[in-house]
Length: 114
Image 1 (cartoon, rainbow, N blue to C red):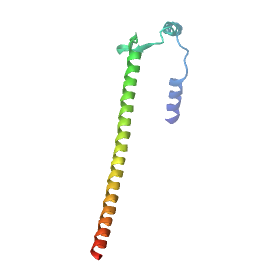
Image 2 (image 1 turned 180 degrees about the horizontal axis):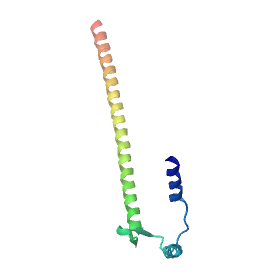
Image 3 (image 1 turned 180 degrees about the vertical axis):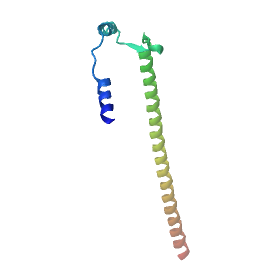
Image 4 (image 1 turned 30 degrees about the vertical axis):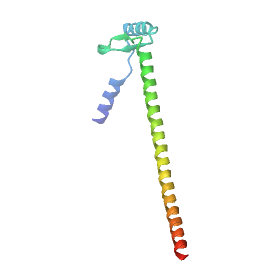
């Protein structure tokens, strides 16, 4: 059974020479498609020319998206910088408050000892 299957597969898969009209049709189609490199397959397998506005429109859309992403990233960076500056100001105010409390206590202790 196994040998029979193998022999049937070999017979079914052996190479066959194409018909003469197939070769001629193929060469005619390939030579007809050579000048029109900017074509796209439409529905039903028909070939149609890509619209002339498609490439500039996609380039403009890509540039707008890139500019939007750049603006968003710049705003995030500025916001992060602002939050870091806020943190530093709060820390400076905390240290200043501690030093002022220490100075107040020192002045009060010196004035009460007099």
